Image 1 (cartoon, rainbow, N blue to C red):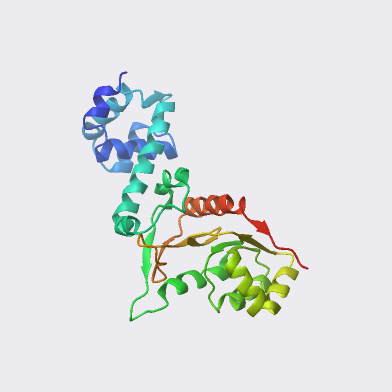
Image 2: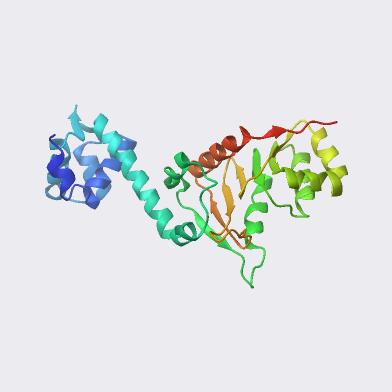
Length: 261
């Protein structure tokens, strides 16, 4: 394979990687590449030649394009970049929390959380994790939630969102549903009366998830089995929202919808 030597050496230097990334957006001529990177021809031509020799870039009609393998490599490089950001930002959190409630295929794609961060409740801001969620919910086009816990503020918040016309789908555990039936019966009836509301019950779940079209927020259990309500993972990356929606759908397949009695 022509690219073996290049892949084993310094092919992924900043300049070569940058050329691949920009060509993934649009084909460019030598002059355009030179202007984009603000370098001389002598600086950039050897790197372009390396990429052409490796069958990652091809020249046609005066412009450089990614080959099929070049496009595949760019996707993998971006995934590695995202994974590096996740590890840098959240490696400690992921190592100390129970990830078993997340299916293996989504763990393998955890790089899709992208530029996520750990939000922590501190003495100076004891509601930081909740504020990060609730401050963004009114802007959402749809909301999906999973929870094995019940915050007394939830009924009021979700009713307010429904009245704004935002579709809300919630998955709760059997124990939480029993508590809602007993202590929040008026809320339950009103919630289920809305066309844009869905509620589902699942036997058990060991994470809290809020997903919209714009963001994901997730609380996990510590590895010692205790629920960590003081910190959460938050990302507003588009790929993270899609990842979270897939996680919600996987739990939805195991849940039973509650209908108005």
